[in-house]
Length: 234
Image 1 (spheres, one colour):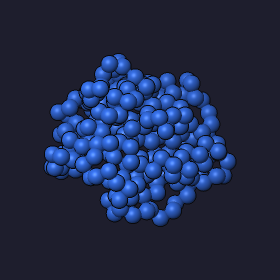
Image 2 (cartoon, rainbow, N blue to C red):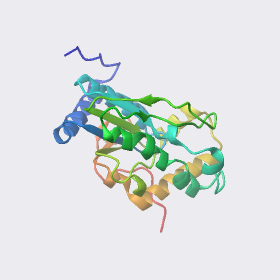
Image 3 (cartoon, helix red, strand yellow):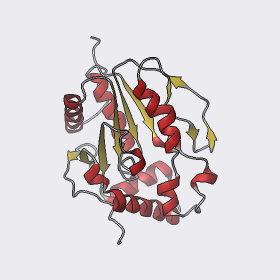
């Protein structure tokens, strides 16, 4: 077997947590086409954590593919049909779950030489991506990051899900660093959409594991009561 790729500049604590998550997953799902969803609120660090998790799987010889739900967003006119500032619309209308299942999840799970697509839409250009079909070996892992991954219409998609969260101040700083200073009304929309999700699904208890990523150099496993997005009152 080839030598594993070197770790990037990760702290020992982050590497150890990633390795433990990989070992847990492989204990239960040793072979075949497997899926891992990395869920969490905006700014919690789920994309980077999913990237690092993919590398951790690759280091133990697992063929791993990465996708993000942002590559399955709907066109702007559809995802904003309830209004640009609608939290309900952000939660329920942002993603083309049907396309996600049809071109990625279902063909990936079929195995064999069936091709699958890791994305279909570029939200920045508000335009479809050119079709790019990928194939994989019989034993492979697909890691997908994105919000709302434990919602009802994605039940049965995942072998395992991870909830990656962080304190509110840390998440807001991450959002500003990545996206710049967003209008307060858009931040409020996204936060209310996350609260709707937490109220409806309780993803921090639905997930198989929870990571407190407040300090990315020293992330830690947490318990099911850790969720920094407070539910909306009923």
